Amino acid sequence: MGDLSRDINSKFPNYKVKALLNIVYTANWIKSHQNDFFKPYGISPQQFNILRILKGAGDPIKVQTIKERMIERAPNATRLTDKLCAKDLIERIACPDDRRVVHINITKKGLLLLDDISKNLKNDLIDNLSEAEALQLSDLLDKIR
Image (cartoon, rainbow, N blue to C red; front, side, top):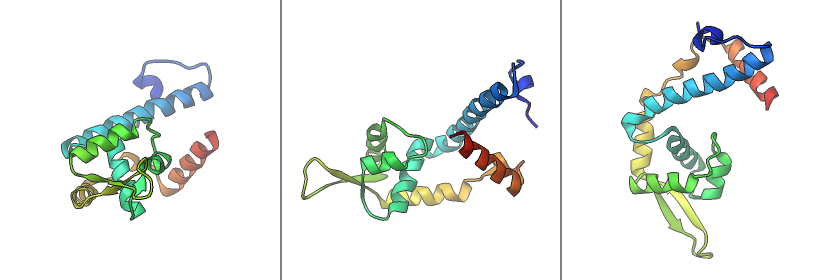
């Protein structure tokens, strides 16, 4: 089991400071694992999130709607969609009523990639937690926000 004090060889003035730094440290640790997992698929965790949002939406949606639903609020959602479009994982659909509006839809290739990823996606990063501990952690994180 990890110990932040040992991992970063540091002491903390109080448990609140240690908890905050532990959240940041753990978030970066998780992000690193996610980046490593998605690399062979040629996408980032943020791009995966966009594909899942589009699959869940069922119908084409605006980029602004994607931004609002993202786990990691990305100001670069347009750039992320550009990369997904270049890989033929999503498509842009012009709105017939308003030329300024563009809707985004996931392609069959994007759906196939999500299916492939879901076969290998594991939540093993939190295997050390019981269901009760996971609920408690989630509640505490909600309380912080």
